[in-house]
Amino acid sequence: MLHRLRLGIMLSLVVLLIACGSTPAATEPTATTVDATTVATTAPAEATATTAPAEATATTAPAEATATTAPAEATATTAPAEATATTAPAEATATTAPAEATATTAPAEATATTAPVGVTIDTTPRQPISSGPTLLDSRIDVRRVTSVPVNSIRLVYDGTTSSLLILTMNDGLQRINPSDGKKTIVASTAEMMGAAVPGGLAVANDGTVYVVGNEAVKTMTKAVIRRGRPNGAKYSWETVASTEAYPRSDTPFDHLFNGIVVSNKWIYVSSGSRTDHGEVESQNGTFADLREAALTSRMYRFAIDSKDIVLKNDEAAVEPYVYARGFRNAYDPAFAPNGELFVGDNGPDADLPDELNWVRQGGHFGFPWRFGDIDNPQRDPAYDPAKDLRLQPDFTAVQIGAYRNDPSYPAAPGKFLDPIINQGPAATNYRGADGKSYDAAQEGKTLAGLTPHRSPLGLVFADQTFPKSWQGAGKTLNGFLLSWGAAGGTLPDRGQDMLALQLSKSGNNYTMTARQIVRDLRNPIDSAIVDDKIYVLEFGDKVAIWEFTFHE
Image 1: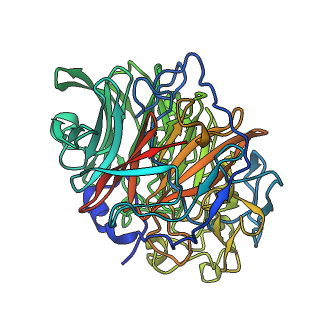
Image 2 (image 1 turned 30 degrees about the vertical axis):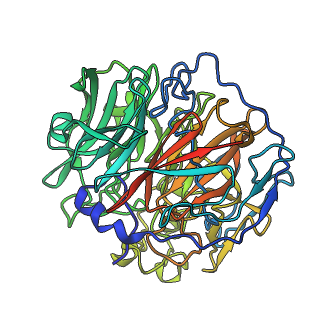
């Protein structure tokens, strides 16, 4: 049985999902001359070395780098996307979706290039290492750093020791020398978080480590956020915050607490949903009529020096710590060099878009009422899943009947913030209401989000130290985004790649171009950026950390 990866769930569920991804189709070799003008963008004077603003340092960036969490040398390209293609205004209301969503026409000036005028890019596929990643840009080299333990889930760069840190679900925290791949265990899972299962990892500029974990307690779950202060070769641990126990759904949709990023002033932590799309998940009647809980589907913010905070499963009690709402599984928050916060979000089991969001305080990003710019069809009192052509039979929520007529579905809370508008050419595959697969970029249109089921992970941003031919003009933000890969369905864009992104302000939102630059990764789950290199961590058995070096 195939079903979508639910990042951040317990070890047993993750292991079941290892085989769900598939590699993207090959692309035709071409040589492209890029026309975009490029200048190196200057990071804010106060931005610290992790690509975060003075008040926000990037989780995985080295002390000397201003790029949030991305390694300097690997950009991921994504295959064509498949989400529905209507572009909503920067702030859209939660209205009932039209029977048939249409794709909006992309601006005439949109391009998907990342090089300055006159730079010729050879996009002929290269696989320098047998059975390794395929490179789709002549300005990238690749090196295999080391193999990694099964169930390694997080990767960051510690600038204080010039080393990588990986978080594993059962082997604790390990330090890796990127030059020779030598690994050293620096903390066991038990000393970091007791009986909790690791889910998130960040490192501050001073080398302080932050970890997130979740522990099942009978029918409930609880989360913990811990801080490890460097103490010689080890760490001294203390609790930043924890939750009281709250109801699990006991399905693959328990996304739990996972992604974390830190700045100079704040700690940001994502809490995923307990449902696929806001349906009732009662755990066989244990929690009657329960959809989401007060602790789920949001991003929290804590002061950097917080200690022993307890979050209750109560809306009023958690309100002082809620930074933004409306996320399903926002697994990898990251700061751009301008200090703004971004995060990917994994969409539902229906063929509705995944997202990349610009996170603003107090904003609501739609879950579970909207995906991309398409309303959740289950909100319609007349909804008939038998007529919903965006449902595919190999996804769990479809198999268990989670898509159902639901006349008591709650009303939307108000206005939503739109995801970043994708101009392509990659990750613009979508499923129309007629059940057919389309590609918005090939139609000359844009997509509010990313191809369904790509599972966007490992978001990192480059700063002005990155090779100039990879940078956009003016205030353009240059990012790189991984895709875990599609777990099922029939959409052509299968992910398991790296995209090069260029984000440009457009009114109250961003638009972006997305270009596939690396493919044939094996369930890539996280990345770190260091100078001109990006390190990519794969998930599963017999996988590796890859070093991608970027050149002019």
